[in-house]
Amino acid sequence: MQESHKRVQWVYESTSNKELEERYDQWASDYDQDLAKEFSWNSPQNATNVFAKYVDRSGRILDAGAGTGLVGECLAAVGYKNLVAMDLSNGMLEEAKRKNVYNEFRQMALGVTLDFVTDEFDSVISVGVFTLGHAPANSFDELARITKPSGLIVFSLRVDTYESKGFKEQQTRMEESGVWQLAEMTEPFQPLPKGEPEVWHRIWAYKIN
Image (cartoon, rainbow, N blue to C red; front, side, top):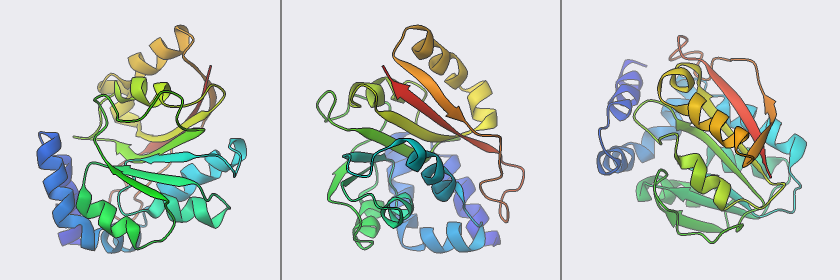
């Protein structure tokens, strides 16, 4: 457990996308063991539960920050088949390929212009990405651009990050300007109950206008 905890903190402390990519590349082969087994990481399932309420199974879905594919496994288990994995770490994407649940793999980072056309996806899911040292709040601008009208963007977000890193302001601004509207926000929960019980997340779901 101690070694796993150090790896999580080490990734949180990344100071650039390049550093984050390199650290995830190094962590990729142990990631599932560390998070699923040692930390009881439950956000992929919690986010899938929300996603499945709103999103048709036939849609083209982007898993933004797919990592090793834990979210893809949850989505596939409830009937989603047209899944695209995107992550800044090629090492993580290589692990995701072994899950055999995605149709495409794209290496790119959130927070900059994405190499997807406007309205390319029916809906987007992003889990474990909006946390310390990771994707910035302005990532939502691009995620909204590539999602079709009436599509959903479902994501997990640390409660403290929402308050302190510009997410509250970004999400409110997009709602007030008519880009999206809130479909659901869960109660706070512990996504890593065994490893980091002090961390709390919510799952958010926004419908694109």
